[in-house]
Image (tube, rainbow, N blue to C red):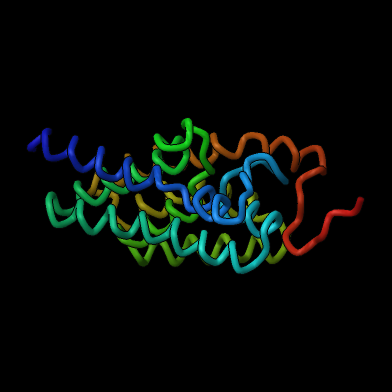
Amino acid sequence: MDYLKILSMFVLGYLLGSLNSSLLVGKAYGVDVRKHGSGNAGATNTLRTLGKKAAVFVVLGDALKGVVACIIGGLVYEDAGRMVAGFGAILGHNWPLYFKFKGGKGVLTSFAVVLMIDWKVALILFGVFALVVAISRYISLGSIIASALFPLAAYIHKGNDRLYVAFAVIFAVLIIFRHRSNIQRIVQGTESKFGKKKTA
């Protein structure tokens, strides 16, 4: 294994991931979304703070950087390159170099990365996410449950690929860790539900 190439792919992914779409779109609106709503620099809080048009740009931007990172990583070092560059992009989104290391929770970028690595598992996890959100109306809960099932799905689909399974475990732990405040709010019954406007 060429560790220099692996490290280079990680750094490249991290720098791409640090281009946080919600913060860039927010700058165009003159708004820092981290100072509004949930305080999260992601698509859901952008939707609540700036509206649908801004959220669409954030969704596209967050997904695109994960896709580009995986494409470049794959060209350089195949599957390992995709995973390392993709993971770097997720970390960059969560702790962006260009925005004082205060980013989002990485769900969209993470989904794009999983889609590039294993599209079959990605679609299954998206189905789980959509079902949970449809029932509970908690986007965060859908993200948490889908992420928690990723290691199991990875093991069932490619149990002989230890790197992939390890990536899935680290991925799940990271997503759940980033949603710890959401978990607390869900338990307390104060988490915002999708499609429900806050009352004054």
